[in-house]
Length: 163
Image (cartoon, rainbow, N blue to C red; front, top):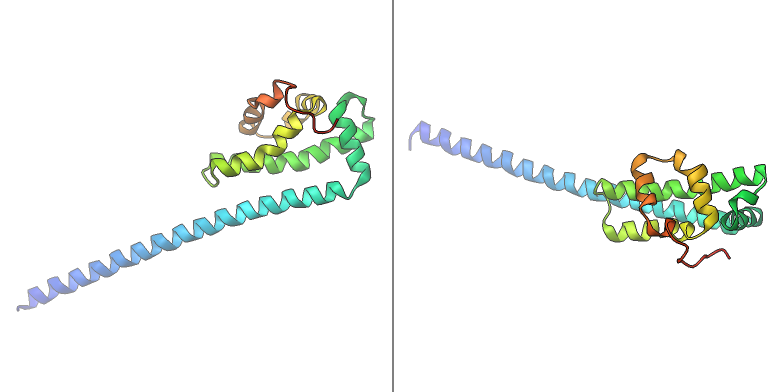
């Protein structure tokens, strides 16, 4: 073997090392993305759980929301503000689920589960009145279009969960 042959073998070994390093890096990036996605989903689930816990332990807020779901227009000024911020705090979490789906971070199954809140809320006239008078101004255009395409906003056929 000549020196040129040894050089060619060394180049081949070096190129194999570079390819192996790139493959390793690609696997690590993919694992990191999966971990980030998992963390994002877990954070949203935790936030939804925290909202439910806070809501269920606050009788006054529960009463305001129940009244607002039935008839948003009957709320006093203070009740209207409480209802608004209660809805924003939960709907913004649903928005993050929808946007995560649009970005490919979560799948359709997670989207359906995460948006069940808005579907149930939208079954109530008071929520729809809030959404059209105030709520829709608070969120991204993408999310507003998503919500407004939900059949629950178009019909009262869905059982009213707050009656």
